[in-house]
Length: 144
Image 1: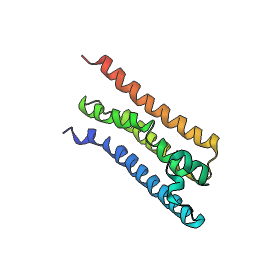
Image 2: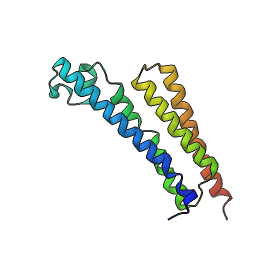
Image 3: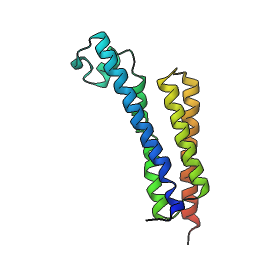
Image 4: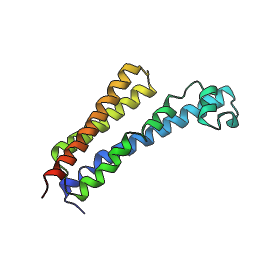
């Protein structure tokens, strides 16, 4: 495996997975709580389209789906950084910024859900992710 300094890039990945797990828990606490409270038959929410029409609180479910969109590019990049020994201080800082901004996005989305605030966190996190990819590509371009 790579050196200990390079392995530090795995901690933001673990944090992103922990965020996804936390949102998953929030999703099921909200969904099951609402279904019990309103006596909704599970078959009434058999698909996401049906659930959106029946359930009032779908923010956690929407956010959980979001955690499998742009973050997929993060999960793809980290092994490439490790394989090419391209983990740098900048990549590590951007990785932590990405995860922190995704966490902020989730808190806003599941919390008060102000779209302008949520979009700002989303856009900033995605820019961090694209910056990581640009650094990686530049490193490959400059490599012998």
